[in-house]
Length: 84
Image 1 (cartoon, rainbow, N blue to C red):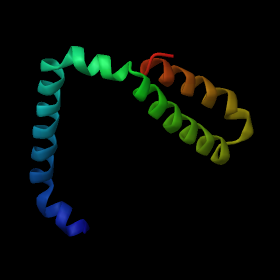
Image 2 (cartoon, rainbow, N blue to C red):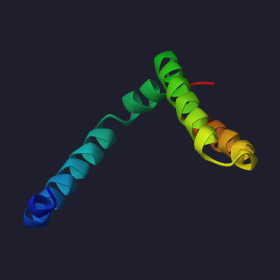
Image 3 (spheres, rainbow, N blue to C red):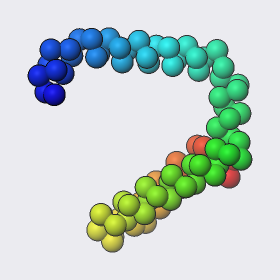
């Protein structure tokens, strides 16, 4: 596997650059729709589930004294997606 990536690093990098360029173009062309979707009820539910899962995992593997920071980061991320 390592050998494959070493031999194809340029191709992988080019493909990643191409995908990023297409994603940026799509976002710019559909910014209003994307922003609306990110503020939807469905996005709120999905993001809450994902953020709760990640925060719970972080709290399990990090020392207990980091729990407040985990909650703070989770809250900041939650503000960026959904409507609550």
